Image (cartoon, rainbow, N blue to C red; front, top):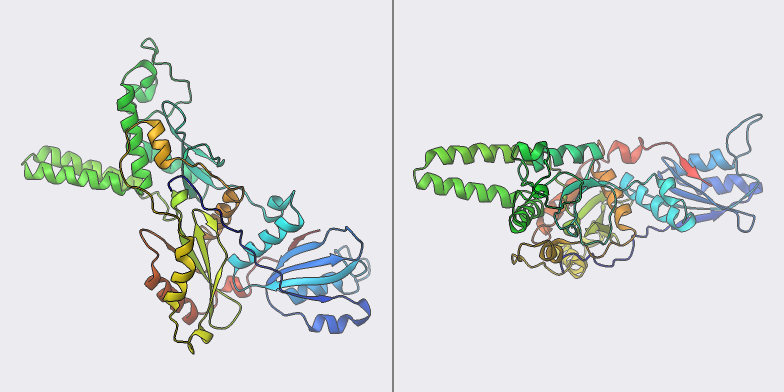
Amino acid sequence: MAGRIPCILSVMLPLDCGAEFDAARDEEFFATLPWRHGVLLIEMKAPGAQPYLARTADIHRAAERLLRPPEAASQRLNLREVAARIRYRVTGSKFEQTLALYEQARTYFPRRYRAVVRLRPPALLKVNLRNEYPRCYVTRRIRADEGFYFGPFPSRKAAEFFAENFLDLFKIRRCQIKIRRDPSYPGCIYSEMKMCLAPCFAGCTKEEYDAEAGRVLETLDSCGAALTESIEREREAASEALDFERAAQLHKRLEKVSAALRGMPELARRIEELNAVILQRATEEKTIAVFPVLAGILAEPIFLRFAELESQPRSVEAMLREKLEPLTSAPRSDAAPVATPEAYGRQYGLRAAPPELPEHLALIARWFYSKPRDGEILLREKDWPYRRMLRACGRLLDGPRSAASESELPPATGVS
């Protein structure tokens, strides 16, 4: 149903390995630790003491730095005398590592995990449909207020740049004043330039403004396709009617629309429609980790172990269908509602926003806009692109592991 985000269990990548720490037998302890990147947690002897949580490019080296006897006069953190055990997870990609760190931080530091992972809600465009005269603006807040949310963008600056060019294509207001429809009100520069319908001084009827706001919503909801297709149809009709002057005007408008839409990132869309799969190399040989994204929320990962699947008659596509189809939200209705904010709110408005939604969007945006970016993402349109998923898995398995996943991860960063 439109406006609803499915309730999905948070992704949990557990710390699946561990060992007790005994300072008297530290060489045996260190010998069990892998020379791999991942996430580690060091638990303390004292009851109630907070653990030390870190992401690291080398679990073995990080443990030695923290648990071997300290050098004389060294100022480095050393946990040898207080550590009881270590738990860790070897990760196959930077994305998996960040996600595992986020999950563990939420568990062990519930009040400050956002600071630990350095999470900041991503920049989005919002159309406030509860306002009698809606406007479109940039925000980082996501609320279940029946608003239309579109994004995420790589930064607030990028969102503002896109919004400025995009809104030039329409005539909805950009001011923040309370609209009173006062004919004596002088208006603003946008109304003088005929770039706003000017509801502030009753320059349009309520129905005209609602119809224009609807065009903005339909254009964003279709990632620009609704507007470009409409102009192309008008241009073709003008050409067939031999009205070449109007056809030329429409062609110039189409060029302006195309230029404005070029600033729209591939990832940006109505967040309830942000359905995708993120594919990453896993730690196991010939294994791909599939991270479903459903309405902007990360779901439980699917691990495709191709070494095992080669000996089984079951197809990978069938396995993906079995996992993904039940998670897909019910298809929305494409029927055009009456052009009022209330009707648009029913069709487009966000009415459920789980607390993890902005955090998962932030994790996805951080990975998607990173350079270089490891792994692949495939967005769902009308259906899941299963064949493209299989080809992407082949590319990831055939290609070399990225430098970021092997040796160029940041040094250990932790919190205790």
